[in-house]
Image (cartoon, rainbow, N blue to C red; front, side):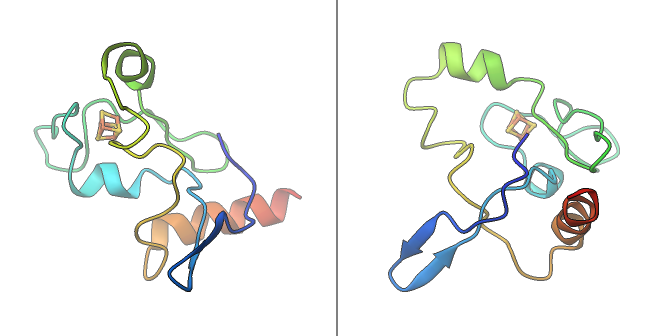
Length: 100
Ligand code: SF4
């Protein structure tokens, strides 16, 4: 799981923030290969948090093996689509910084 907080680059003048694996997006709306859980708190494939609060995708290997163009959608590692007002992401960043 990524712990590098450096920006990935700049797109149209906007800094691309890295994905830190908080799992936030998978708690809001599952991708095409996920399914929302019964309590509507996240995708059924979202894994439990590690010691930094990061949550992986339990279907990641299946998606890589079976989905052509998986690099585009879901955009694993392409950057964060919601770097602001995202408390789950902020907590992971705080945990990463405290551990460094
Ligand atoms: S399948 Fe994986 S990437 Fe897609 S929503 Fe579920 S946990 Fe997230």
